[in-house]
Image (cartoon, rainbow, N blue to C red; front, side, top):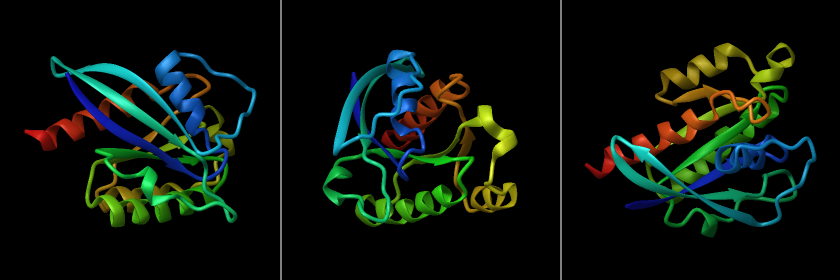
Length: 167
């Protein structure tokens, strides 16, 4: 079995913990609990017939008072950037976090998740901006921790990309 560390990165209250809870435990709670420091979960997936154990580091949300600690990134094989579709500024935070992650990890696989697809009518994130990021090679998905839409695929896709580099 292969074990890989991945990090959840994003602004405060974008749904990182909810996505992890949906992925690992198949549950969603409306109750908001802020992450302090880092919470680590583990789940094993089958990727192309190979067992992959993902160590998911759910790191606190970045805001104007709290910046990402580079030491949390150490040893990561990839990461998931999370933006809240209903808050445009969270995409800017995700873009900045991607630069920080690349400075510390180099070019490792990542996925940008625009969360809260169940609220797409309220989205503030411009499709043209997402298209521009996609044109730059970013893998972008839409998901919903609340409904579970796309959640398994997000983690599976990242695991596949990580394993491709191991070949």
